Image (cartoon, rainbow, N blue to C red; front, top):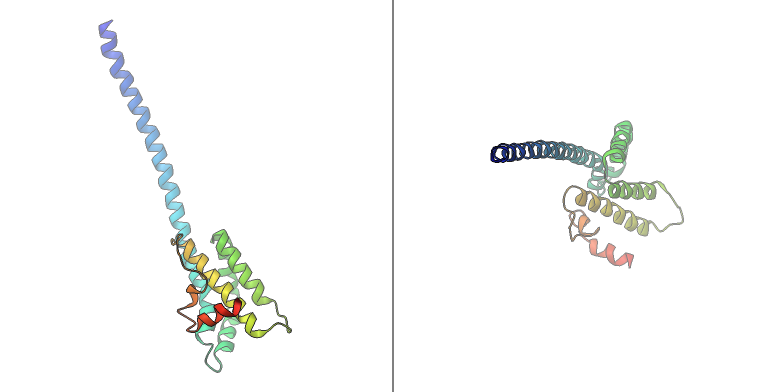
Length: 168
């Protein structure tokens, strides 16, 4: 009986350790595979977010020049197929919150109401654009940010405080 315990216990321990190692390896490989896929998705999101924002930045950067906005819009229209591809990538790879913010911004920009106050329309659109930037910020890793839509625009609009008060 002693020889049975002397042989069986070590064999059982060896078997349990072997099974544990195989299970551990399997779980770890699945985790690493999932992590690699998530990293690839994050990289694709960052590229897409940059590409989708470039036309807007071009328009805003040239807004104070005489022909600036029309030239920027003309550039977007010339390369509309590329812009649409970037929008498709945004819908495919972007997070839900970013896609929703982009859609809200796009829908509002595409609606035109001749009776709407132009100044108020600009305020609303800038807030939507600030929300899009904020959602992108959160999606690329700053989930606990304390910034709001207006904070996202302070680098661009020096009198942003006026916009905040116009909304109230």
